[in-house]
Image (tube, rainbow, N blue to C red; front, top):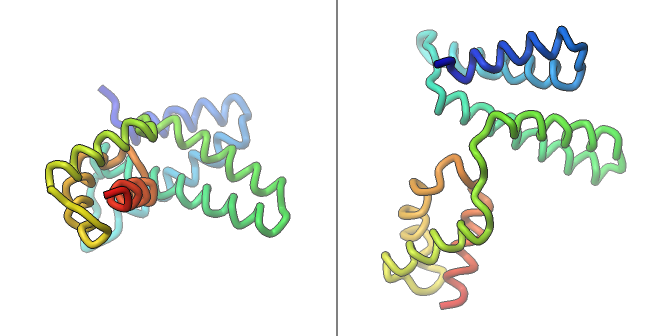
Length: 152
């Protein structure tokens, strides 16, 4: 079984051969970020697939933030490029939870903790975060918890 990093390398090679500039530049930058994460710290180490997914999630978030900034600055072409790169990165990430699935997990956590009111957000987040790790962005999770607690 190939690792995620090997898959990224193989897909980069295929993109270069196919002369797919968007895909090859996106994968090249992502592999650079993975390599940088591997040499960060006191000694070089090989990242696990879960750690590579975290790096890819960080890169995807950078693309979405940059797209928003470009759109706000009136640079639609640059924003479109960033969003296209985000789509390429999404192929390497686990499928995200839908809003309904996230709401169910949050509702179960609220019931489990017996929380009521916004002051209990930390307790609920402590229960929800491990269940949705890598499957939902932190901002989405926090918004869902906040909405669930404001209804109580």
